[in-house]
Length: 235
Image (cartoon, rainbow, N blue to C red; front, top):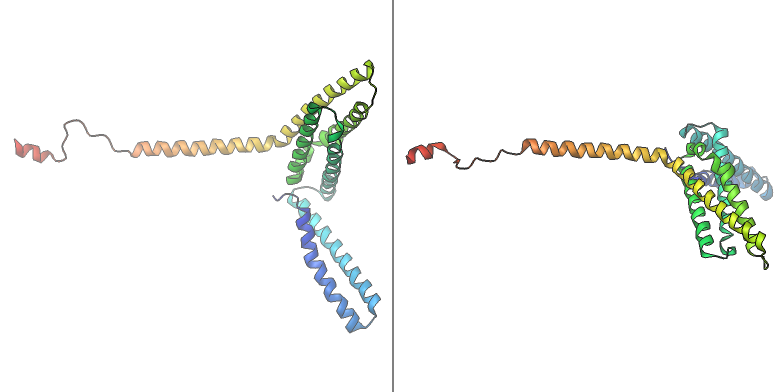
């Protein structure tokens, strides 16, 4: 199972579509003699049609590879794209916070979000383990962070505003822990697979060690000689 590779797919489409367009233009212009503008327009249309067709073929192939329908696969790709844009919004608030602890907390939240996006991009089926993150938690993080940075930037802060800021910081901390659970959930199958591989490797090592113990020669008893006949002759 290969991860999502939009750039690789794009390059593959261009390696087919561009040569087709490059061949079509001189054929139409020199062979069909339909004029420069018309030849260019038809060649461009050929490129667009070829590119679109290949894109649909890749979409069907990739969705089948991941065991998903086309609509499911397209939705996951859309959510990944939107998720990356939302993370950029979070990153835009880095220098609007006024304390080191808030800055660090925001960075940690962004790192967790990026890791979740990366895992889902590698295996789109894991999107369904992270639906709350994509549909709720990430949006809440952006909304709370933007409101927090708006309030913290105000020159005058009364008691009520200070309490609100503290409540927001605590809520962001709780949300950070929730997103950590989102990450653990999408990694759960990988962790379980790694544990199985470790158990299998340990079993193989134990079996190898047991075999080495079985083939070790028995130690000679004290007083034994290599040839008993030599002992008899000496007597």
